Image 1: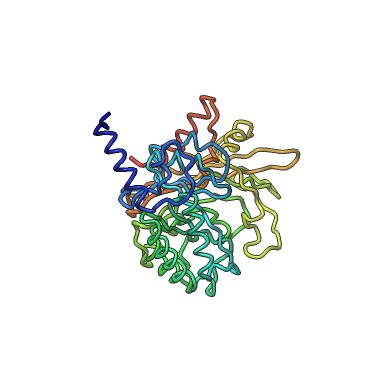
Image 2: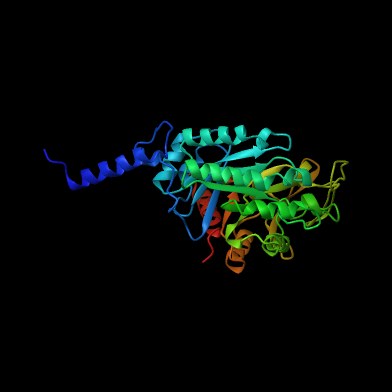
Length: 363
């Protein structure tokens, strides 16, 4: 029996895929083509990075918006197959510490081999330690070597890394980050945890204040990073502050703690995912309150004798920040983490989660 034209075309595509050498790992996808890393030609004018840390909530993500999934922790072959079926890249997050052996070529070779075996599309670098001059000085050559080796083996591979919310020009770290950005596809500006570095008084405050977020992003552009490489990362979580002294809503005084850095840093305050915030909000004593200076919501609740103030981001605050994409001509946006939203079957939860996804895409 003669093969159909469609069948011959399918065989030709398969033969091209087999001979390309782009995929050397085991394939568990229902269609073998979905194991292959995406082509270098698969590009989008605006990127949307979905950070995923655990679980199977990815099955309910808005795949019409995502361009890349950044996964940390356990590798999920089912997630990779699903993403590739939607022309979405999956890159693995790699944590780097000051004393890691990342300066050795073997570290890069091992990571590259792992990425190929799992049919992933690249790597995202996360610095687990604060950047100092000695540490940051090694980054440009590291990123350059990673990019060169990955492109030799995976033609469409994508390399990105985190940077702090602002480019501190008082040190050489900022210049090193700018130099490293020349070899990366994208630079992710973590526009949150601002209070870790700028407490002026010990009161609960917004995690990602509007004006500081704008200042931080602009600082990298002014220093020389191509704005099209910059990805704005917004938080899908908040902070649950315990008030040492509660004066009134918006005046939750915190206990000063003797730690390195600011005396009332968020480092000692627990993060709370957006889905838990939405469950806690209806039980609050204040309801949602909007701070027009910081352009962020918060609420007050009481647990036992202690007052708590929760500051977070929601569709309104995130929508205001997504306007930076057009204003500053950024490469895209991402959220940390996509699995922090509520993907249960309840209609209210579904509506709130859909609003969070829509807030990432400005009209």
